[in-house]
Amino acid sequence: MGQLFKRLEENGESNYYPYHMPGHKRHACGELPETLARLDITEIDGFDNLHQPEGLLDGLQKRAARIYGAEESFYLVNGSTAGILSAVSCALPVGGHILMCRNCHKSAYHAAYLRNLTISYLYPQVCEEYDIFDAVTAEQVQDALDREPDIGAVLVVSPTYEGRISDIRAIVRVAHHKGIPLIVDEAHGAHLGLAEGFAPNSCQAGADLVIHSVHKTLPALTQAALLHVNGSLIDRSRLRRFLHIYQTSSPSYILMASIDNALSYVEAEGAQAFEKFRKRFALMLKRLSACRVLRFLPADLQEQDIGKLVIYVKGALMQDSYSKEISLDGKKLYDILRLEYHLQPEMAAESYVLAMFTVGDVEEGYRRMERALLEIDGRLRRRAAAKEHRTFLYSPRNADCRALPLGAAWDMEWEGLELRESAGRYAGEFVNLYPPGIPVLAPGELITEDVCEKLLACLKQGLDVQGIQVSGGKIMLKVLKAR
Image 1: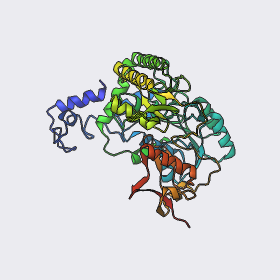
Image 2 (image 1 turned 90 degrees about the vertical axis):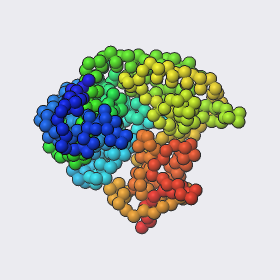
Image 3 (image 1 turned 90 degrees about the horizontal axis):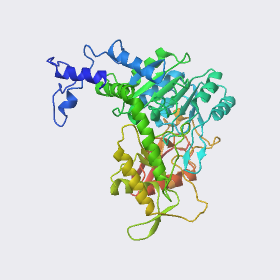
Image 4 (image 1 turned 60 degrees about the vertical axis):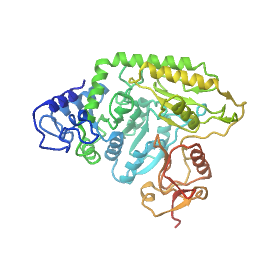
């Protein structure tokens, strides 16, 4: 058990009466379990203050920095979103110029909007065989910085949502040669660098600001995250200022205790737990290689994160309940796994399903997924070889695609327009699939026929598309009013 959970339990069992917040006063109220209420406190004596840590929390943050190889680390209770907002805001002045991956989470776009930043995009290459986008490369970053020398910071995503890993050391060298900081959204890589057999994390690779969602791949509660800082390119007083702005002034001690607990687990049992995790995942992939139709992204320690099972279904045919042969897509496979086998994947895309594995999975989790996929594969046959139109979860825009500045566009007047009629207009709102929250369209981007067809295909599959309203049988999209 982590130190903070132990202290919270001791406080809950003590005879101190709470004449302070929160209002449940450590008792069960309504459906709130007493086990949670007893642990839930505000900033009282002996428990430090996240916004000015000098005791218990200060020591826990220093331990996090030591574990990850950072100079300084900060607990986040508003998720990686707060970390990305703070990192981008402190790294650049208002009106600055950022180079960032087009497949960044929407919180990066929100930070750019709030700081009125000029955005230049890095467009990842396509892994054609699996309909996903690869990690960005140092060469891409170098080319972009050579074209636009006024860029003041770089933001990359590694691992990507599907687990593709960038060579962060090489990107650090490129950014630092220009004297600018590298921010790494490593939300999906909180486990990296913590044991043999895993890629290094971005703190170890020398990145200036690194964000980890501890809850995504380590045993912590949802919203538990970390922000790490290294080097002299970041003004740490400004970083603290923005952490105070974007984080709640009433941080949850239960969430902070879950970060402490996860890192205590890593220190005490990490070596054995990660080795078991690595072996179990590798064995599952080996057994799934017997599939004839379904395909899986292979694990590669330097390029592909362990734990992301990408199940590719493109070209698979199956019989429906009426014995009619139909194409299998990501949403259909997702529904089969969930409804027939009671397996809940992370998400469905157009041509694949993503299932996540972590140190928290037990043997049953691997075996059930193996059995289900092998059985499903036995019901499938592959369509005769033919060149197929490829569609993707989100569409990197061509570098010359017309767009209005995000900061201005999101504040412009908009009107509702049917999706089929919106091609040639500029988007007035973010449109994205959730998960993962990567924009298909950002405000100010030109809406093309290709994007319209893609969104219609996603809606037809039943994927969760945010930023679109269906009213009276019409699919409506916010577009900027013509001027």
